[in-house]
Structure formats: structure tokens, C-alpha cells
Image 1 (spheres, rainbow, N blue to C red):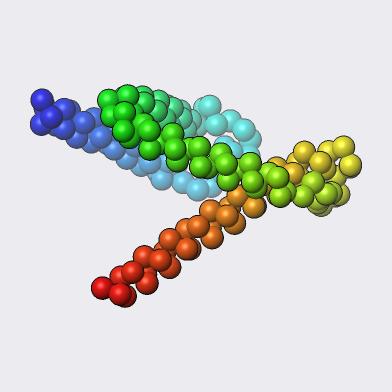
Image 2: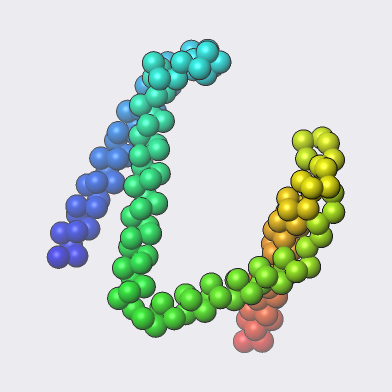
Length: 155
């Protein structure tokens, strides 16, 4: 069964790659100037680029749906993995709450102008939360890297 599924998936990937190559070739043949003119005139629907964009959007949605479905199926089939996943998500949520609690909500520059007091609070708070969250995850990642590096030197 697995070999049959593997062959089917290989054929599907090959077909998608072939279709993508055909669309890519059509775009290259159209030339840079033609594509720039089409984008400037906003006539993408009548161009060589339109099928490629539609194909890319369909692939994006299909890939997202397939990834979510198979992830959920894998989590349901393996409860121990589900437990570890939920613990990881819980830890990330705790770190997000910590980041939010330390976030500043002062006025920030947006598109070259300072936001008004009413606008600045929410936007600035979440921007600062994202920066704090990234910094915390970066410190944890660097710490894990350093710990692993020291551990490998000890061996």
C-alpha cells in the first residue's frame, strides 16, 4: 500500500512540476517588458501570467489544506504526540502572555507619521509584543544551541 501511494504521489508531484514548468516557460517567452506593461495596465487576467497566478493560488490552498488535514490525522492517531504538541502550544501561549505583559504601548511611527493616541495603543502594544516574543524565543534558541555546543565539546 505504501509503495503504491508513494508512486501516486511521485506522479502527482511530477505532473504539478511539469505544469509549473509550462507556465514558467510561457512567462519567460512573454519577456520582461511585456509582463511589466501588463502589470502596469492591470490587465493580468488577459496575460500569460494569469494562469500561473491561478495555478499558484490553487496549489497554495491545496498545500495548506493537505498539511492541516494530515497534521490533525497524525495527532489523532498518536495521542502521545498530541499531548506533547499541546504542551508546546501551551508554553508558547505562556511566553506570548509574558511578552504582552512587558510590551510598551507608547506612540510609534507608522508610514512616516506618529500615530494618534487612540491608534497607538493597540498597534504599538502588539508590535512590541511581537518584538519581545521574538527576543524571548531567540534567547531560548541561542541558549539551547550554546548548551548543545558545550555538551558536544564535553564528549
